[in-house]
Amino acid sequence: MHGYVDDKDALLKRLRRAEGQVRGIQRMIEEDTYCIDVLTQISAVTKALETVALTMLDDHLSHCVAEATREGGPVAEEKLREANAAIARLVRS
Image (cartoon, rainbow, N blue to C red):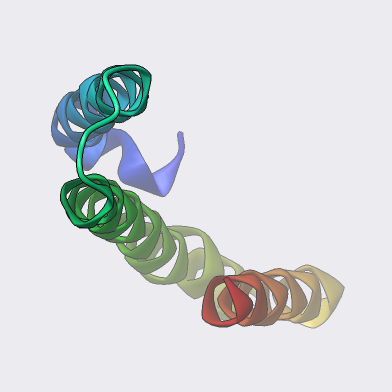
């Protein structure tokens, strides 16, 4: 079982909302909406996706990584490498 199972409904709800916002941004561009208004909506979608990413990361650390570190060995080392790489990708984006 994945660590995010308890947050699954909330994550899906937030992703559906972000999907709707992206469709709204597409409409705004089609309708030649003022660029600052479009940028405001892009910022809102970005924050929504960041929230999903941080929730997933928190769940991964507190479930998958914590479980692997209790077991120790190469699995724990691999989970830590995965987590570090995921954090690096989030920071760069």
